[in-house]
Length: 548
Image (cartoon, rainbow, N blue to C red):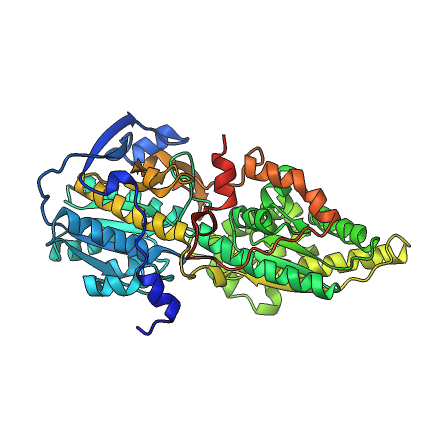
């Protein structure tokens, strides 16, 4: 692997660790746990792994060396900065258990386990990838582990390689699959532990036990840098409104965090739109009012941040999408057999009256995007819906109407952007480099403790790294029942933006000022070297959430 000068310097970075993980470790058991809701249903589905206690690791006197263990690791779902450091921490952790421990990576996600496609991760290979972005050490994929046939096929290669623990690094759906796999292996007496690690740049895998998912810090800093660059250009040219869509299908954490960092003129938070029962026209009108307000001062420029999943949070459209998802889950082949130019009419004829009228009223491009192939979870792929262009066009039309009515006399020219893949594989920030390495080391401690059905957890993240608290959380503790593919299934509960939480409260208290003035902030690039105040700061969201 050819490396730049920065990569070479970065490879020498030694991630900081919680004090408890620096030497020998002992485990402290907490209280028994239960799922966040639907306790009866979850307990029935996970009789062998439900109700387990939380675990906390503490420093201990030097003990005897453990037994060598073979471990498998899978990267599942979309990429997130820091994944390589999780694997490096896991590797170093199992080598501390015993130098003869071995780590095997299954290639291209869960599919590698099913197809028995793997490679051994050696010290030489691991050293090539420390503190680097991406998932390319073994690749990732979105195959879902849901069926007994898949579990049994995976068990064949685990037995062949004498793998006694499998670590699945992924988001809420991937870790749900890990919990199901842990339960199945436990139920048949297979000697394989299954441990999860919380990954997603979207930030929606968090709760009281998981303070943040890895990759969120780095990705939002990358997006904030690029938005800041756009805002500086915007303030220099003073003639464009930039509509910027950001990743975040199920929650608006990225949009909120970026707003806290760059102070745009407008930032839409999907959860607020849903809570206030706003229509698409309401959203368009609110943006147009800010454009008009600034135009009255001679400022025909600004920035608008838009969450990727916004359109799903508009109540009427959310109802439409839910019915579309259910219909296509059961009639996909029938729909695809219809001629392309007749598909719109076919869908209109199959929907309820209210949703049929709404679907018919949508621009043809948006209607088509709502019926494109679903993601592996059966949901509409909202990243394919060009919400930023839709809003820019509708705001332009609204302003044109107001101009005819004499309510608006400014100029409006828009540019649209979607910042998504730019943030998924960036070189991890110091925070994510440290956090991910600690998650990997914690996963090794969970393996040494002999448990299964747990997720690696590191808490107290706004403190210096040596004060972080490492432990394990039973994955069933985070679960509830949700409708997927037309059926109720156990899944890890997604964390949406809390409209009563401190990050949103700070944003809400300042957004009118940011709209009426030009208060842009230009964060600049991620800094890897320098004082902790510059290099080691966690996200604004995490700081505000942890402020007492």
